[in-house]
Image 1 (spheres, helix red, strand yellow):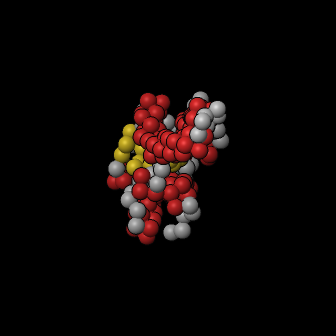
Image 2 (image 1 turned 90 degrees about the vertical axis):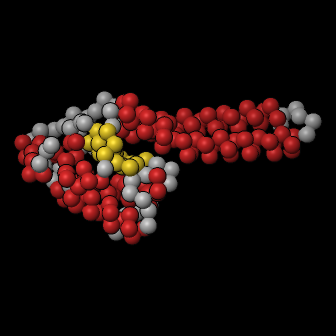
Image 3 (image 1 turned 180 degrees about the vertical axis):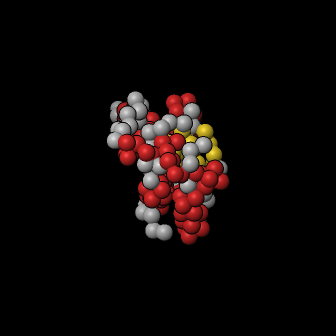
Length: 181
C-alpha cells in the first residue's frame, strides 16, 4: 500500500504519466450512446411498423410510445449494472469499502461522509483500479446508486489536497449536480 507521503513524486521528478489505451469514460460513453441509438432505432422501427400505412395510426402511436419509454427506462436503470460488469472485465476494478479509501485518503472519506449526511443519500459504491494513472470517474442512474471509481495512481501521484478535491468532487457533481458541502 502506498503511503500518503509519496504523493506528488512524479511531478517532482518531472515524469509524465502515460495515458491508458482505453479511457475510463469510453466504456460509459459507448454504453450510453449505443443504448440511445438502439432506442432511436426501436422508435423508428415501431413507428414504421405500427404507424406508417396502418389503418389506425393513432393506435400504432399509442403502442410505440410506451414500448419506447419502457425500453429507455430499462436502459437507464440497467446501465450502472452493465458498467459494473465492464469495469471488472476491462479494468479489473475491485470494489472496496469506504474504510479502505479512508486508509489511503482520510480527507476524501471525510468529505464523502459529510456530503452523504448533508444530502441524505447513501455512500457511493467505491471501485479501485490497479493502475498508476491518476484517474477518478463516476457513473450511476441516481444519487443513491452512484459509483465512484478511482485508480491507485490517484493516491500515488496526487498531493493530498488534490486527492481530497478530485474524488468527492467527481462524485458530487455527478450525483448532486454540484458539490455544495
